[in-house]
Image 1 (cartoon, rainbow, N blue to C red):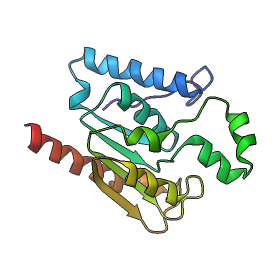
Image 2 (cartoon, one colour):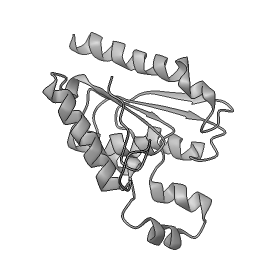
Image 3 (cartoon, rainbow, N blue to C red):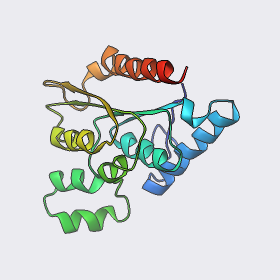
Amino acid sequence: MLMLGYRGYSRNPGTPTEAGLVKDALAAQRELAARGFAAASTIYVGESIGTGVVTGLAVTTPPGGLVLRSPFTSLWDVGATMIPISPLVRFIMNRNEFPVERQIALLTVPVTVIHGTADEVVPSAQSVRVAQAASNLFEEVVIEGARHNDALWLGPIVIEAIERLADTLIKRHG
């Protein structure tokens, strides 16, 4: 397992931009490959903004599988739900779109989508749209009443979903 601390997060220097965060993820993936862990043998896991990062990485460097917790259709769409003046939101967010829904449709790897129905940051409907757009949806895990930052996301729900995907990939590919 490799966990990233992106630029601008976790006391790391820099400004978090779409291009920069995907570049960070690509550097981490290259480090894993250098240590003998090929992308095709790896499961990328992203939560919230990280779903945009790992989906962007998966488009350029496909993994064995992808797990997205609280994915959004695009960062612009999330912003528009908070500030319902879409052109203004797009202007403010500039080039940081993170087009998860559009990118997920390009991927052929198995995808697990996990989300809560009471998410106040990423509307559940956006996560549903991402699951529907996935060309190879392995599983959609919906947690009734779960909010974006509930402690339950740190427990077995996400871990067991990753395990189910990993077990299936191992059985398929040995």
